[in-house]
Length: 120
Image 1: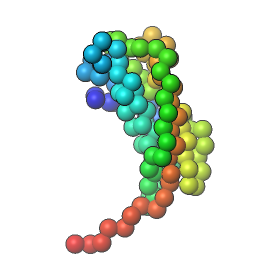
Image 2 (image 1 turned 180 degrees about the horizontal axis):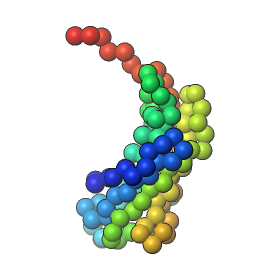
Image 3 (image 1 turned 90 degrees about the horizontal axis):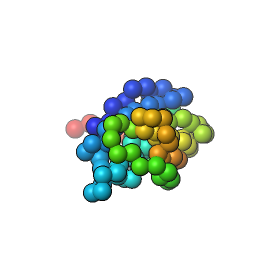
C-alpha cells in the first residue's frame, strides 16, 4: 500500500499513501485504500494511547468519501475524539495534494490487557 508514517504522537498521527497502486479500475483512489490508511493511523494511535501491557483492537470504523484523488499522494491526519481507559475514538481526515478533503473516517478501538503468552 506504500503507507509512510510522518508523525506519531497520542495527539496526532499522520501518514501518507500514493494514489498509484491504490486505484480502482476507473483510475480513482480505491475507497478501501482510504480505509486501510485510516485504520492504520487510528489503530496505531490507539495502541500508543493504550500503553505497555495493553492492546487496542478495532471494533468499528466508518468512512465518508467526498472526493476522488487520481494522482500523487493522499495524507491522513488522525486526531483523538475520546481517549478513555477502555475505548479510544479517533477521527481521520484524508486530503489530496491540494488540501481538498477526500475522505473522513471515525474509528473506535477497544483497549484491553494484552494476552500473556506462555514461555516455550
